[in-house]
Length: 108
Image (spheres, rainbow, N blue to C red):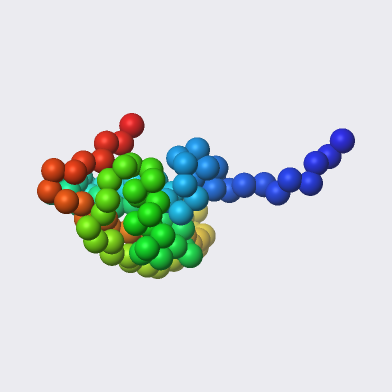
């Protein structure tokens, strides 16, 4: 018997396990690690999310109130594979969340 449930992408599954559909997860980079020491955290977010929705989602997920949220659109890029074929890197959206002094977010 076949069910008609649509397949979820990896990002949607990751978001569902995290607890909120707008915040896809933290963006772990060298630059974001330096910012985390100062209370600035970077997250990958859904492309349709806006600043107010992200602020509410962070408050629900991590129990901290952001002071400010900045959003940046990541563009898709054309890359060359080892075989010589061209492909594309998917774009997306990232949010930079600023917290009050003393507030911290811990990632598991």
